[in-house]
Image 1: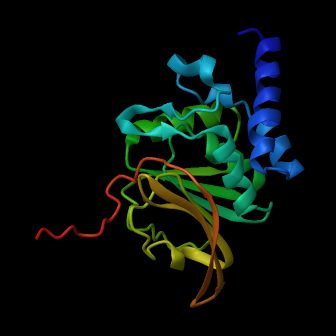
Image 2: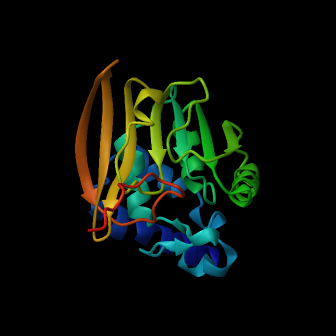
Length: 220
């Protein structure tokens, strides 16, 4: 693709996919426009960087559709003074966007390959306010910090409270809950030390977070 084709595809992605999926915050639209998604897409899928598709990644993971990524960013509404935690680093695209919005991002992945990929991608974009961690965060991530926003990029078959207490008061948790064919994106906001409110955002389907807890299945 030529640079003209890339910019046309980016414009079409924003106008035909992102904006029409109720992403109307101009700050988010500008962020999507100014963060080169094509630089974070695996080489084999460069021509699909702006398509309304989940793109395959190693280890059975995916890069979410642009419209879903944009809805996540709009929902958590990170401000310049706030810290974010991302569970599931992938190629680093969402971490890059969060880093441009907020003060600092900690991103965790169970696969070292993704840490290396994302660290390289963000380095090439000169984004430095991100800490990369490798670990199993399926049941939560307690590093001593409380975060203003937590984004979980893999689904949880069963909602648990392993992340709730890592939020600041006023903090927002984005998570997709359920199993196919019924999966729901939720925004959980902490209003007090023991008070949370849950808002249903949209229906979607994404692969489960590796090692995510599941309800035991009982055989008769």
